[in-house]
Image (cartoon, rainbow, N blue to C red; front, side):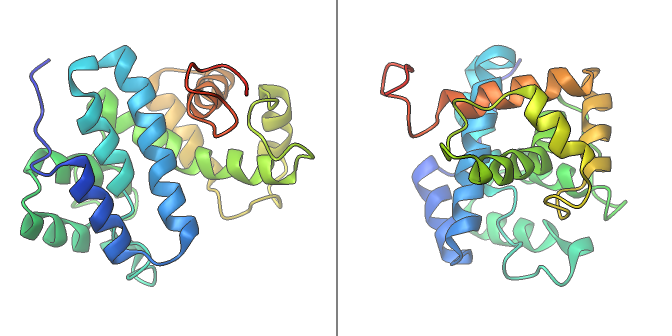
Length: 200
């Protein structure tokens, strides 16, 4: 696959994330998606690992400022990114995950876009589950526990189960595969692992 250029550095992407988001949760969510996307890039598109990461980090760039207009989510982000020098490839990757709310946006086509679509809501559900655990760690979390919470619609009700299911179908993975692989991705950069990827 061709090398993709985000048009901005990872450092500039993080500055933009902080300029347009003040809630620590939204900044953490961006960093979480960065880590997930980089994890999958190492398997599917290693030449573009940083690009995948920047897409993940900035996927909700404009959400905090415009959460009352979900259909325009990522439309505002496109203007911000163009002004900052972001590439059209970066903008397309980000906008594809909101195509369910706005049919004028590009649909997920590339593996990167499908993974972003599938893992965005799912990462929030996993995070909510982990916060309820005695360990507060993803390191001892598993698919069985996630499956139970996924079926409990009242738990983390804001995490759209239909979007997660649609994402798994886009990827051609069953839900358990998506669950397990996303948990593994989050474990790969969990704060309770040391620098060699082992539990601290």
